[in-house]
Image 1 (cartoon, one colour):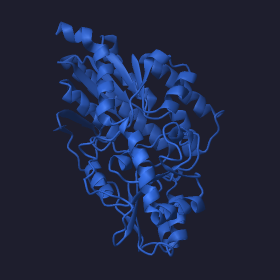
Image 2 (cartoon, rainbow, N blue to C red):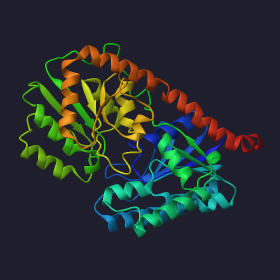
Image 3 (spheres, rainbow, N blue to C red):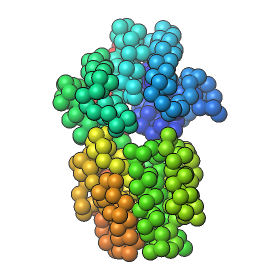
Length: 395
């Protein structure tokens, strides 16, 4: 049996990409140990759907630059120790490391020098994330350092994974060999995000329900969404806006809800497991991805788009390069990033034109179906098997 360790500076199983990939490895007959953060109500060790989870005693706080550095550094040291100790007894064949941070890949030093293959999963390009998060320029010394660490992290790894075309092109432009990097899309697991046969959008029930889910940060434009809702609350009298997620912008978000007098319209549900999110999508009429324009969001293809389409729900998304690589005006509703008036117009368009909405939705679903997790999973396992078929034959 191929034995794989996975390391992620996140919570498991609530982080979708590590969960999808770890469970795919288990389904393919491999053994998977994952080392991750420990939430306040989580067990230090347990098995989740066949994945052996080891949680390290660090809680992510999102409370500032110095705190981030401390959390990253302490987690890398703990992960290095735990992974090394487990490797001595289990002899992992491969280590699958998820960024951020990129430097987390170096915690797999002992497995690497003893023959294990290293898989670096670049969820996001760190320089662009930090340029966006802290409003700093590409010439800033911190960004130079992040690009330096990215380059050496990629060199350290045997294979690199990333979730979309623009990310792959960016990493290649910064020196990653084309043969080394593969796209594994952020497609939802259909067994969780499963649409019912009667799951039809565009037919108005008692309420017209709009949904936002994901990390609540300023760059994700939750304030833009609230401004758009305030513009149309009288035009769509049965409007409900459901918000799921947490992040460093929650206090500002809730304050803005009060300032705009939207407490009867906006329902905030906090962070919820994937299964709850999927159940919530089942009951909505429209999903929105309200990202603002930034060096990061311009390249990103948000997973939430696929999650709504998987469940046969229309979605409004920002007009950015990462999304336009896959969708056009006939397969997705677009708005100009950061423009609440334009977002409000798109919401009203969906509400008033259900037939047109269904046409666009059907074309969007066809595009999503090209990248269903069933297909992406086979591609992912193919990459792993190509790394390990010789070692597996020796067992």
